[in-house]
Length: 331
Image 1 (cartoon, one colour):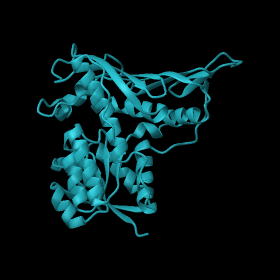
Image 2 (cartoon, helix red, strand yellow):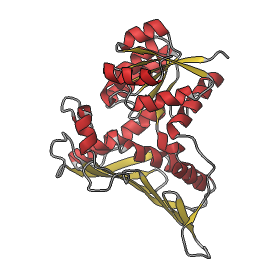
Image 3 (cartoon, one colour):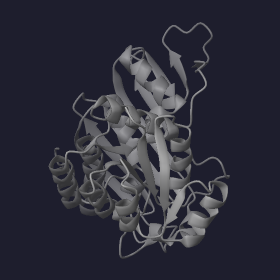
Image 4 (cartoon, helix red, strand yellow):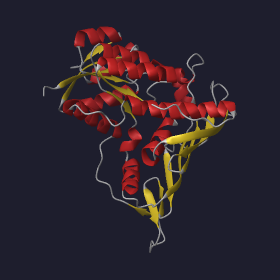
């Protein structure tokens, strides 16, 4: 198969994605686009062989890429994805796929109408922690899982000041959907489908944020397991401590991030598992998506799996606002 042409839209996280395409021998990064001309110039200074644009449709019309990587603000994902698909492009879009159930419906119809592939980036599935958790679950090493929790405690004051779209009142970004979707995705991937969710939230610290800056959501899974996803944007923690923490509690053992403890352990200590060197998870996603296109396979996190993640998060936000359990929409 001929090499695939790629264009990247958005040079925040997109700059990291662009480097991932540069290391893949089956694609050619032909262009990047950002409304901020300085961001484009900064990228082109290191990669002068790539073309830069400030207008999205002009880039698509001139370059005719096979793949568009969309790394723009959350609320722009629908429009940017629909435009790319109308130009016949496959799409890799960052999480959350979209920000409303109405947009979920539109995007599903768009993918089906255009006949292209769409994949949502959920990079934690490809971290060492994620790989280990999936292996333990597949082998039933931990036994019957009765509880799991995913925590993302962060301090986002600096990032949100630097990139004010995160705290836009015109396009409010719920913490559970914008960041907690990592934890929701991990729990759904490991435990299966959600039956209902209840949640509490508050906005006691980051008062300028137009939504709750803390939320704890409790998910009841069809398996009977209970999961919890916690997200905070206003923690007082050291730099570098802002990562997703995952715990699985089972009848035969417990996982805590990248270590585990099993019934009958002679050492009475946590155990680890040496993992082979791994590529950057964002780059792994790129390699996988390219392979899906080449092999004409449906990506694991396609438009409907992305929809189920969005629905589970929106249900949590609704539960927090109404004080009532909510059943997520089914896709």
